[in-house]
Length: 69
Image 1 (tube, one colour):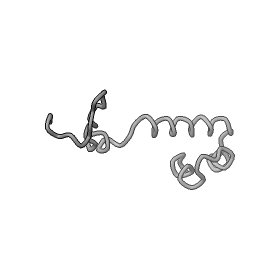
Image 2 (cartoon, helix red, strand yellow; image 1 turned 180 degrees about the vertical axis):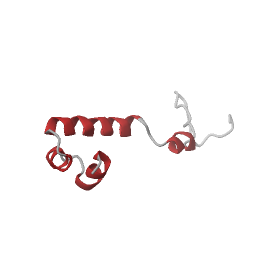
Image 3 (cartoon, one colour; image 1 turned 90 degrees about the vertical axis):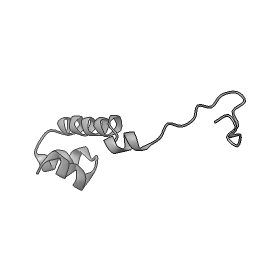
């Protein structure tokens, strides 16, 4: 069983993943932290380009006023 399979099956449970992979619990914790950091820091590449930039809010900004667009 690979780490990703164990993570999909048990979630972030360090004891269950360590037992399934036959590794120490602190090693499973390190792997879980690395995966969570990677998931947080790298959103899917399509999502990064799909969202359009939001308008910058400033003093006097009115969303209903479109004449200055």
